[in-house]
Length: 236
Length: 236
Image 1 (tube, chains in turn yellow, cyan):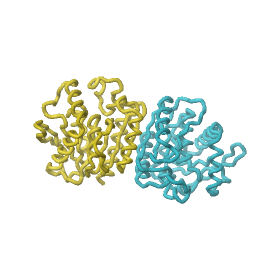
Image 2: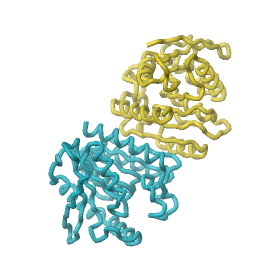
Image 3: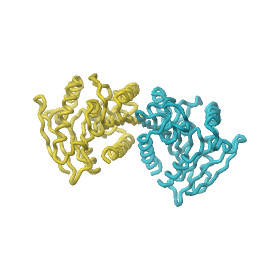
């Protein structure tokens, strides 16, 4: 696999994304937005999987290069800061999307975004901007709306959700359904029983250490299978 | 395609099921429980699709042979009667399952059931009995519980659901999630935005004539794709 570091400076913060192009012609590009822990081996593995399906993978650094490999408490502090200003987060996400579009071999009209936990919220927020990417997929993302003026949503949206997620209750699922309906989005929510937050991460329990945050092999397999179908729908 | 009429008498009513075995060795058997309109060309088409995937299809006659091709009002009257006695419906479904198991080439341990509208409710009710079939899939099914003593659910459960279904509100989705969780089921709900009841039936609007009951090409395609993945999971 090829891995290219892509530097970007935003509001005096140095970000460093990871661009994993395909060997040959790509079916399209998938932006991968990591969990609260930032870019780790987990996301590189996701990138390899996407490469194997024929998609370039652009792993977004939403936190900043200086946080790479930082301790959990540091990352949770930064998460709180980023989630505390959703307008600034929106600008950051749109700037990252622009940078992804500039990479060699990326077709600007053939982009989707997937995200995990906080990254799931990020891709929902990206769709909420009204940007014209093909689609987004949230894996155990946070659903709370940004409290910004609502836009019609052009991107298709899917959320893979653990029903027992302690951070996203059934009321939040119903609210997301209503929000996406009102925004005119083409949307789906796949809910998995007996499944908590962070279900795609084999190290969720040790890494996050919050009850209800844990790997679930069935939900992991089912959501990735659903993603493969969804990307085939988006990119043809 | 081979089509075999299977007669069964239950409580003095003559049922006539349609058994569509595969040409060769089957991966397993899928019971198909029709909508309020009973067995029609729609279900035969589903049977052909299942045959194409390598599964035998047993299309269940829940209403009785004398209702074959009956008018909508007659069928809705019979639906109300069947839904009015869920204990009797349970017995009928278990008897039909027994009959399916007796067909030549059916392996008793390799059975799943899928259902549509009222048939969706039937397959949920079949799972609710605690029977040990591999799994059930409800397409735009009704979710209201039968009001019978609850059993641990052994079958896997998935429900493909249109979020705008006028007969199944978001509260009913949340209630089903809770019920299936309490019953210990391995469950999933896939919700589709801007999608009503009857979304797999191209003739839903003309056949049923109720606002909010209509075909949806995207939800139809997505739910059948999801079913193909799900059956592969169930039958290996």
